[in-house]
Each structure stands twice: as structure tokens, then as C-alpha cells.
Image 1 (cartoon, rainbow, N blue to C red):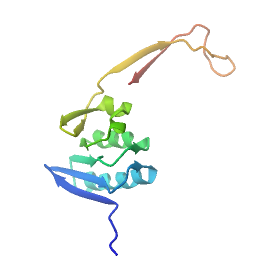
Image 2 (cartoon, rainbow, N blue to C red):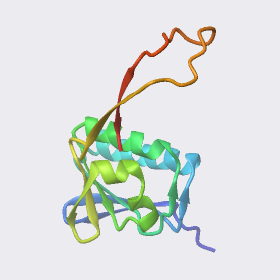
Image 3 (cartoon, one colour):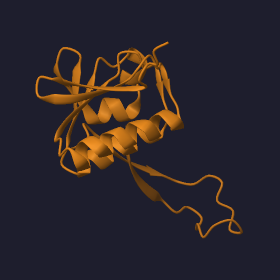
Image 4 (cartoon, rainbow, N blue to C red):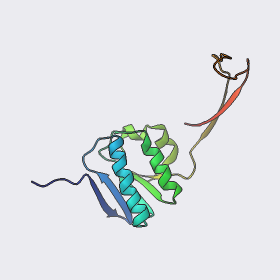
Length: 143
């Protein structure tokens, strides 16, 4: 009986592409495996162009985007290949990825749009915080 490998790496157009075989939901354990694989490619093999095959993936644990940011901060070009509609609708995807070829999305150096919002806290209880009545707070968010 042959045992399937949980991770495959292939070279495609000069990019090392990582795939978690037949997984449609990536949980924390899958992200750990992916982080270990990417770490090996980036730190040990000196890969600077990495792709992640997303064609089977419908849901991802929240740490995925942070992991991609860590790789990008190391100077690695990150591409997501064939992401599903559920992934494309995620805020981090819409803000930080741009399509460079059909089905290929590359990590952008800057977010598409930064929003600055002013608001007044409605429920500012002095015992819970140091808010002053009618104080305005400015928050910058990416959406």
C-alpha cells in the first residue's frame, strides 16, 4: 500500500510551488506543515519565488496571511495559484493580492486601499477605560 505525501513541491515557470494534497480546509496543523515547508524552501534552498497551490482550498486558518507576510518580509515573491472564490472574498486577499496571469495572484508590496475612520465610543465606562466623554478616536484599517 502506497502512502500519499501530505506535501508536494514542483517547479513551475521558475517558481517552487507547494501543495497540500487533497486538503480543502487548512487548519492549524496544515499551516504548521506549510510553514515548515516554506521555511525549508526559503531558508535552506534559498528560493525567492514561491507559489502555493490553492485549487482545492476552500477555508484557511487565520494564521495563513501572517505566514505569507513573514515570507514577503524576507524578500520572497509569493504567488497563490488557482484560489477558490471563498478565498478571493477574504479581506486580506482582496487587499494584498493582484492577478498577474490567469489564476495566478501575486502578493502586493502595499495594500490596495487604506481607510482611516473616526468614531466616538458609545459605551465608554470610566471604570473600564480612560475614555473621556465625547472623545474621538482615529483608527486606520485595511479593508
